Every structure is written in structure tokens, then in C-alpha cells.
Image (cartoon, rainbow, N blue to C red; front, top):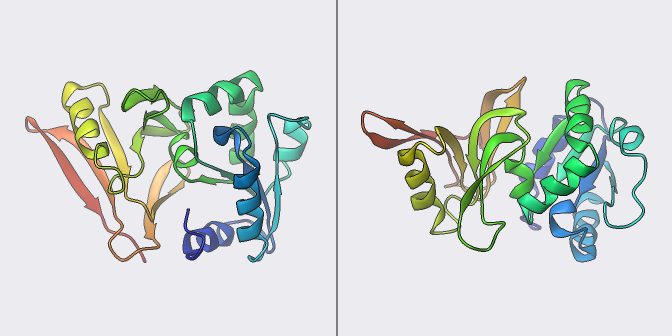
Length: 215
């Protein structure tokens, strides 16, 4: 998301199980947009890794063989609902879970950041922000672009107040949450004021708890 600030990309690569890791980009949420894939290669060829990608809208390789060999699977942004529908047709939830359990780092931006949770807040339908069932690898809900899109905060607060989403992790642009074995380990940031928040309903009101990042 930040071509001139690769701090979070470096962070993800440093989490990999070996030096010079393989990093596989999934641009499914953008319909495998060529410009997005090109941007990925432009950015990651400058980093200490071996970038590649897997298409879903051209000839798709044997996903289990390719993805289980990766050190990092990096998911791009776009239409979360469409991405998950395509993935489920290709049995991707099971493949990604196997990769995760074998030590592959799962990461992403926007749609690629929220898809791992039980519930996500998405604008995929083009009719506002709505909850959507995610992959369920991580408990609770997640909302991206918390400071970048004005409607995000009030929409999330409303859904939590209604009980539609019990609680959620909200991420400012430039903030990333690092989970280990399903538990939040730390928050990192590529921008001075980017934060993550735990948002929940307590004592009759919606409460935000700032999760200060390790910059």
C-alpha cells in the first residue's frame, strides 16, 4: 500500500522461517489485475526475497503443491466477498490453513488483512459497509482503513452496538497486527500516528482501546 515506505513489507519478510524467503502474491480480490501484480513485483524485487504470484483468472496451477512450498503468502486488496467466493470454489481455506499450520506466514493488506478473521467489515457490495463471514483462522472481527475512510468508525461502532459484531480489531492505514498461534503478539506501524484498536461493547457503550504499536 505504501510504495515509498516498505517498512511493513520488511517486517513480514523478517517473520519468514528462512533467509531469502519465497513470497507468493494473491491478487484474487482485484481479479488478478495486471497493474497490481506488476506493482507487487516492482516492490518486492527490491527486497531480500523471491517473489512470485498465483493467478485465479488465468490458468491456475496445482494450488496445494505451489502454496505449501511458500514461506510467505501475501494477499492483496480489492473485493473481499468475491475473493472469498473464488477461494472457496478452489478449496483455498483448507490449503491456506495447512500452509499456516506448517509455518507459512500469512499476510496481506486491506481485503488481504481482514480475510483471516471470523467476521470482516467490507464495502464489497458497493452499498455501504456490511459484515461478512471470513475464513475464521482468527477470532473476532476486523476492520481496515479505520482512519483512512470516514465511514469506517461509525459503521463499526453501530454494528458492535447492535451486537452484529461482538468485538473487532480496527486498523489504521499503516498499522499491522502480528498474530502468533491465533493470539495477538504485537502491533507494528509504518507511520508515526497509525494505531490499532480493540473495539468492543461494555457497560452499555462502545469502547475503543488503543493498542500501541512497536514502531
